[in-house]
Length: 134
Length: 199
Image (cartoon, rainbow over all chains, first blue to last red; front, top):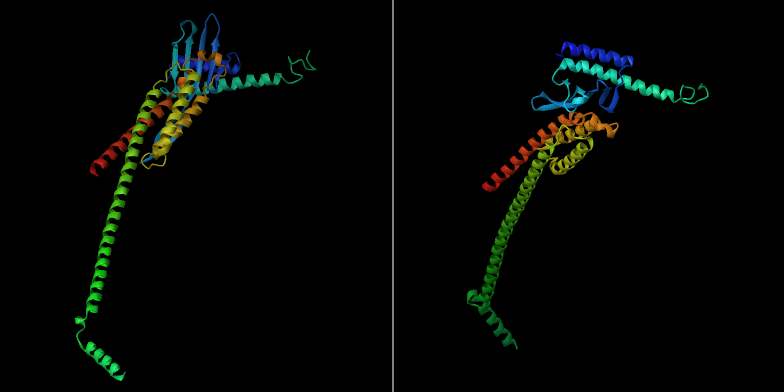
């Protein structure tokens, strides 16, 4: 079970992400990062890890199922290399559920930002130099 | 003239009335017949003997072929076991700070060597299931690797451990399956040695 303070912190991050005050950047298709500028100098990394688990369906018969887990790492950039906090969904199923929600919110926000950029490219939208630009 | 004929008939009657074994012709024909029979029996005996020898030679040739095939299989199994041991060591090179390009290179090498080593045994009843699982694990690892391809390769070091986290479980699965295969190949080599000792 995640620490209650950590639980609250994750809720606040989710809320801020949804409101657009926290910007997540896609580092790779399964990882998002959030950079906290100076003077705090921090970096939060959220990663989705898919793995196949083999299980027995009947004596002598095995099958595989996909397991999705999430990892959250928080780095203090002044003390890089070792994460200040690391939360792994593999060790904490409850935290995994919360991280899954955060990943979904971050992913949606990143997609929304990309779509806003795409929309801004259309003629007539502000900043494109189209005929309606003032 | 008539007396000549009569004398010849008398002679013929005299000849026919005498026992046949007193005639040289009979003994000549008898000897020739016996000699022919002897040659025929000898020929038959030699044929039987030749057939037996040919049959024996065929059996020995089949046994030699089987032994050669078994020896070849044993050598192949030993070669594959050595290759699997090396692959197992390569899999341990996965480090937490590995970069995407290094991981891709490592997975490609492991995948190529592993598939090449196990493909001749894909239909072997004792290995079939494990080989199928290995191939599936390699495909899954390739898929997981695609999931950690950096959006901007220049910033890859900003997310330390991302590549490792993404593929570590798949590498562990491949490592376990390689260990299973290694055990099965070692068993095959052992069983083959036992069979050779018995024969």
